[in-house]
Image (tube, rainbow, N blue to C red; front, side, top):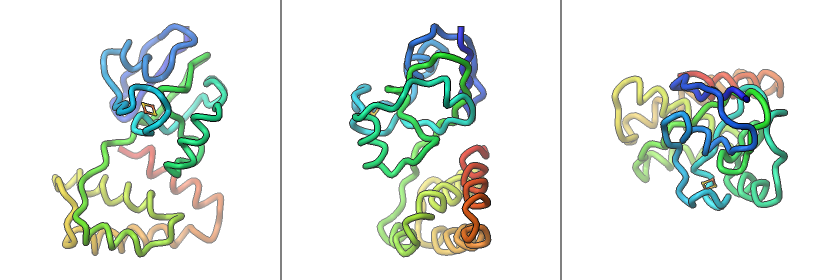
Length: 171
Ligand code: FES
């Protein structure tokens, strides 16, 4: 039976071949968020595939459309659609934190290509520091710092991809 591992919790176990990642989480005793009930229309069940992309079913048109609409490039998959045929390791995005409107404006000034990654860097940092809501006081310095980090690698596609991967896979 395929072995599935979910980070950041590290929960893992064997699950029957052919079930979705969403159902695999259920079998391992926890729930992934899935607001639309598994119909490929919300993207809240997204996961970042760390290993084993080839051990997941192909992306169909509904999933492709949703990933595109939510701007989730590979190796993102919708866990409700991706069926398992071999060992996989995935990373579950944390729930997005609340940002005040003016804090979001800080993000909106960034090039779209970085925005998601900067948001993730800022939220991970804020969580580590026990901050629950991103207000401008936090957003202004944190966004600037994250932008500076990204700009160092943005000129090189491979470096940029490695940086994004590291951000996703860090706790
Ligand atoms: S649960 Fe909504 S897209 Fe998967």
